[in-house]
Length: 309
Image (tube, helix red, strand yellow):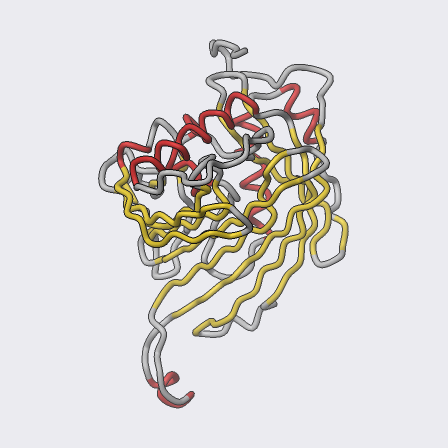
């Protein structure tokens, strides 16, 4: 990172690239499921494996808000923003990687001019290239000095992917029963590299967080991830719900919080006299109208990459 409010630009492994979790209807949970840590982790990991097997092309409407809660010094720039987008969840044929790509339609109720054709791009360019291009383009709409381009609703679920699972330790925090379903909340801590997230210099950034899991099915109801990159602490929280029309569990709410610098207590005069910088940004996305989409050609893979099934 350069400067106290350097770029927050994380590199997330495309080996388990980012996208949507979907799953067909599950069997009714057992009356007395095993709530041990090992059993719940095994069930959740198996659930994640089925995601890849059953993932299909989906698109959803996204309503996104940003707010700068605190900023020292004050840039006198806008402190709130609303956006409307379509978000495409795909499985790239090469390796079965997951990706989520946003097509921003409106910013502060104004249409985005000269939007490129995302579907056409997916048909003619490698999916990873399309994702990178759109991430860079969409980051220009972010408020605040803390720059970021990886607000992905299911990033925290990749803790359970085969690539990363063995690098985490888990502890049981609580067990509760809701509407006849036993829910277990697990805390997780990343212990080894390669880490889920790296900084621009490819240095490991170790994550912590929580997963709330149905003990009998392994279905994740809520996921939260926390990590520090340079001087920036971020927290990402996703809540999942059942889409009855599709018969799938999908992300319905995604919350982000970014904090950089030192919060100075005391009066305004004290803050003015203390040399410091601080920024707190909160964001929330709501997802609706999930539906399947098709392209007129297969999603393009990079040259030399083998196509998946």
